View 1 (cartoon, one colour):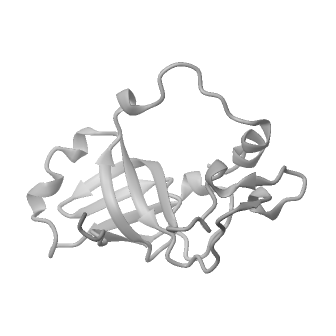
View 2 (view 1 turned 120 degrees about the vertical axis):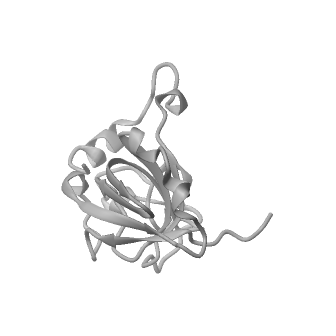
View 3 (view 1 turned 30 degrees about the vertical axis):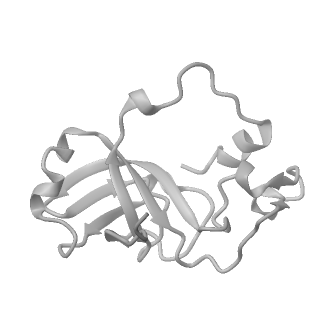
Amino acid sequence: MDPISPIGVVRGGRREAFEDGWGSVVSRIELDPEVFEESATSGLEEYSHVEVVFAFHLATRTCTSAQHPRGNTAWPVRGILAQRAPNRPNHLGVSVCALAAVDGLTLSVEGLDALDGSPVLDVKPYLPEFAPRGRVRVPGWSVELMRSYF
């Protein structure tokens, strides 16, 4: 496998991590013209949402075991792979956000929970057919944690 390299960067939006209120955040994904020709985004404007893979570039800690989600002792200790915390071993984030506009290699997005300067590793159109089929099960603590996230 070839090493994974950034294909772009997040611009605008938040400069510091706040755990909630991401739904109103407006930012841009500036794709690298050294990687893509402008035709790479042709047809992307037909989609309402994109899935973005990015790096938590400001994460300084790494957890390889278990912790309280968000450090909140009211929630149970859970393994890092049972939560979506930024301090995972590879510091990767995956987010589905609204695609507001496509202008060449610049994507305007809403609700992307990545900080200004975050390296973007991939962008894919969101297809509902890739969403889970059948009933989705999540623990109660995660419902509480996500209540105000977006």
